[in-house]
Image (cartoon, rainbow, N blue to C red; front, side, top):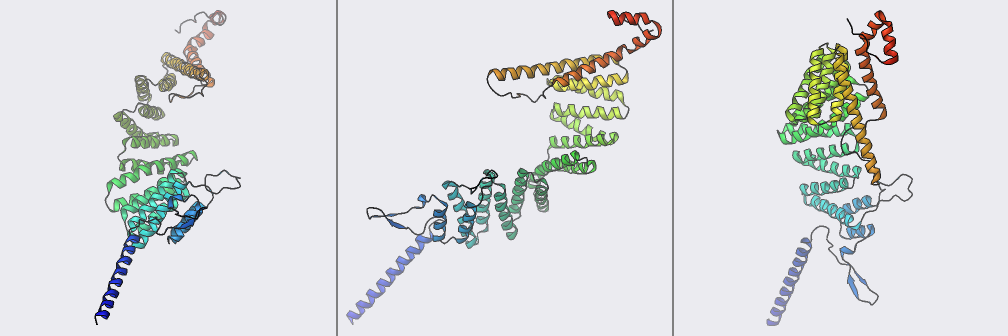
Amino acid sequence: MTKSGGASVTTIGSKSLKKEKAKEIVEERSSIPPGKSRFSRTYQTEEGSSKVQQSEELLTEADFCQRLLVDGYVQSYVDFYHLTHRSDPHAPEGRINNKIETPPDDMKYIRDNLVKAEVSRRQGNTTGVYNAFNNLAEFYKRNMDWRTAIYFHEKCLEVAQLTQDLRAEMTANHSLGTVYQRMGEWEIAQRFHERHEEIAYSVDILEEAGKANIELHNVYLVLAQRKENASDIDGALEVYHKCLESSKKCWDKAAEGEANGKIGQVLLRRGDAAASLPYLRNHSQIAADLGDAEGRCRACSALAWALDSLGDDESALTELTLVHSISEQAGDTYLQAQACRSLGTLYSKVGKLEQAVDALQKHFDLFKILAHRATVGSTAALKKGKKTEKATNEPIIKAEDLDLARVYVGISRGNLLMGAYVMAIDCRLSALLDWKLGRTDLPPIL
């Protein structure tokens, strides 16, 4: 009896010991973080001793793929294989071997996030899946691999829609829209940003709505300019109005002023001077409030054009005088020159010929200053052996621009002398001949 009782105790003890060891193994395996090897492969060295192949020794795509299969991450293996064996999106055309080259550190980052997504999916952790895919999308955005970034952002959007996570869905739509903007596919970007805005207003998150409208303003601005360049004036006006609404929704006064100015200028080109006045005045007022000298000069110049078209010459002169004053205070030589030319032509139109000569002469003098600056800057750069670079935003004044400015001065002086010239022809032809030969003074106009 004692003997059999001792055997049974021994058997029970050995079974409990095996259970404890099995439990330790399970706990050890379950505590291994995703992406770490559960097994250690041994291989024989030349001396016959065995070493353990660590995961840090993985250097090639084949090594990483093999390790993923050994660890049981089948989906991660499939995705990793396609990501590291596809064509290089940045490879030049005509290159024979255009397989993408991925450094080991990048392969490790890709593998870790793929494994994290797969493990999170198995555990039902949708947040972990979303974060892993988002990490991969941002990684490919940094590498300017836009199509692959879009693929993972779309994966994020699918996860967000399946779980009805509206915040995550807004983030995914925003990310997709910005990537399509970087690619120049503005119509597709518009669709994602508008969806972002729609969700934001449906749940009353004004911060997200403003974020969406910042991007929508940029998208609408490009689309409207394209329509304007294609002479689709009505289409451009429609999109510019959307641009104006977006700027108001994101509380961007500078963008609002710019949109007002764009609408006003398009209406002017269409011949609706009266309709353009409210938008141009809004642009001028917003630019004044923000201290934007260049924006206010553009607004006042357009206002002068509109008022002149409506026959209000005095108001137009007032706006142009304001442009000249603002540009002079701001020290912007080019804006001063433009204002002087506009003033000179308008003075000529209303019959103020002496003021026209003064304004157009100043326009010519300012253009000479700008041309001299450009010449000095290019000469200094050549002496230093560097390429010519513009330190300011002033446009380069060419010889043709100077010639045109000189012509303006000549025409204005001719207009000033026209009365005396006509008088000399009618009354004193000899005086005209004296002026022609010796540049004597013409007789005064009676």
